[in-house]
Image 1 (cartoon, rainbow, N blue to C red):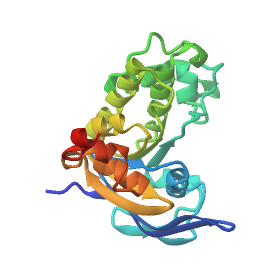
Image 2: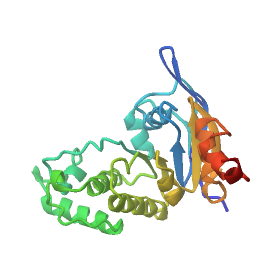
Image 3: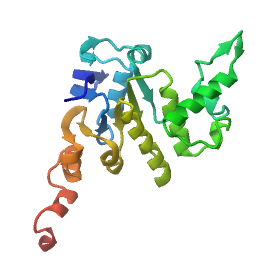
Image 4: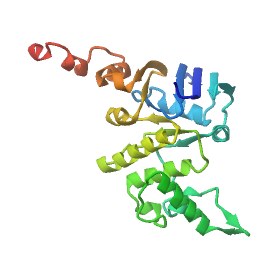
Length: 259
């Protein structure tokens, strides 16, 4: 039985002046699934994420949430639906500790005073449920590794109990160990029944955690693939728009003879 559909995009268009950033884009994300959004630079990935997150409203098309049309014209609309976004820059405050970053803008107060004890308790509880290891939740974020900072940003997005999380290049500029930590967290999100839309240029990461791969090319759909049954060469061909390239030739029968 298929998982319930969370988000569906139907015929999404977005233009910036003379530039057609998105044209007739379709996309579906279901609960408990990770969909990777891939494509070359300028393919429209970040624009599509911003449309879903309410940063840039679509010019045309329909956005459905749980099967019903909705309007997402500002970030508040997306958050109210249950869509959380973690951008590549993370938007963390280096001078604040982990607790301060998680509750920034949604601090818990009692009698007009910050309830540090309760915020720390909830922080430890959330990190524990996600199996996130942190030396101390009272360390300034500036002292954390790149992978730890990324997990803090993702954990913060979960405080509002979203049903779907958008991740923009979460493993960019991370080392092998830190990347593994973030990918483990993506697996945790899926196990919690969330829908995840993951932007990544790293096909190794995509193959490791995604269930489906949606390819954008020049602002249009150029393939939707099941990770388990699709080769990396097919995905690369869809990204580049070419069926004849160095990768596919190398895999073709008789390549060694031709060389």
